[in-house]
Length: 94
Image 1 (tube, rainbow, N blue to C red):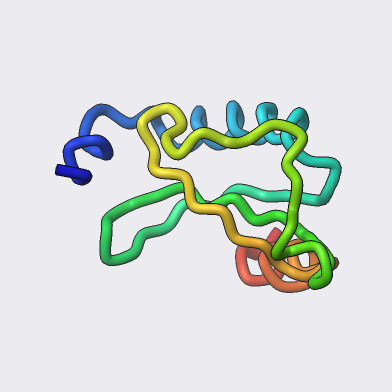
Image 2: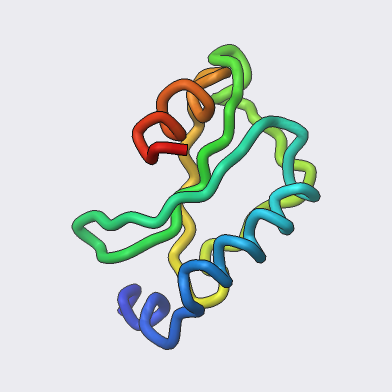
């Protein structure tokens, strides 16, 4: 039954990314980025948030992200500081 929740129309990736980047400004003070991907449960939007390791287990969002955003399943990935600039953007060629 859970898969029924994730079914339905999804906004185009570029629109969803732009809207989610704007939404994340009110959710965290840390560096963040958005990337689309997939796993065994299907396509999703991954939100990368840079958080020091001592804060990862008790991270407090300013505002929680919904599990579904513009039709996309949202997966949050906490990464160490500078990961987005040095690894994620390097891999994407930004």
